[in-house]
Image (tube, rainbow, N blue to C red; front, top):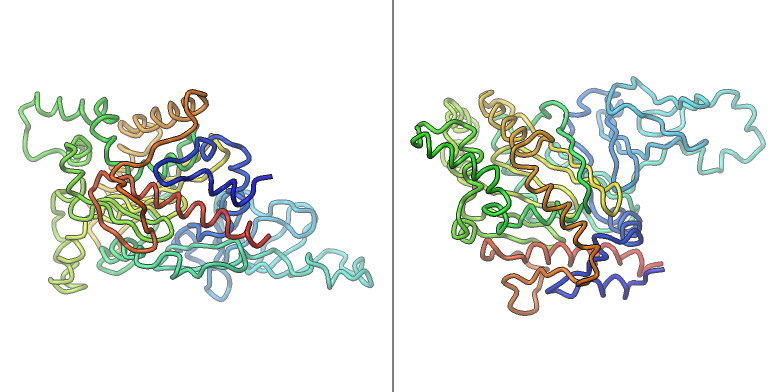
Length: 436
């Protein structure tokens, strides 16, 4: 059995032990401790916009249901009947009406989880059933927070507060939502789903790895740029070139863009500029934003072009392109990636078209660019099984001991954000182990 000391020994600052990516024991502990104690993304409120609407997903390895109750509030419930443990909902989404009904023995529950009815209830008279855990109905998760439409949950009943966990990192969500003239987003269709044969942390780390694009994506983005140049660099650039070409920016571009880190494992690339900074203007959009916010505020919103914001432990958002990627762990070497896009309510449809194009070209199972990353992840997962070396190096631009309790902006090619994530990994892996 792993102890707190065993966990802390896996991360030294400059390096991390390969077990964090390969060990079934470590994966099990992540599900038991990390994903229980951190605040984890569940879904968007627009996925459950009407009373009775529900959406099924998972937090770590725990199946949950996001549902809109009759009072208009969103609840997150464990997807389990308190009777025999049967999953209550197996469809991805739907509308259950005023109650859930177990398909096994017809126990029914209000959409806030409370027990509503049991067939032949007299069979439980004088059995002490009313004092049992099952009499309470479906179990809600420990805590739920709807922040500007994004629903997060903490499985543990007690733990770090939502605002303390995220702090100023919520400014990236603010910027994405503020880009809507109406100040709200709506889900735009189902996510693109893509299975990866690698550990979930590899995908999270890659979101702020700025030393790989010009290398790993040379086969896709590099080829596209080459063809465009052979055509004589025709202008205006087609939308596909606006999306793909920036991946081939030189190291200096990424160094100067900067990386910001916040406490508890959150951080983002693109402090000063990003690959999204030079997209063509969409007719009518700036005017609509000015009408909603005023010209000064509208310019302030659009001048913030953060690249990838990582919300520890397992999502990334792109504010300028209205995208969220959810990295769902299914095993120590298996991760399901869901790529969502959102509509800026009140904005021209052309913006959503560009967002959808970006998602298809970069993140779809049929994408041109995403396969480059997948190839690297799976090679790394296989390579880490080699006995040639036990440790993975993450010490780029680390010149001494680091304090992750404060916000910091550094060179855009630093690996500080990876170290920041592992600092948080140790923290939330061990907080409940220390209490045990």
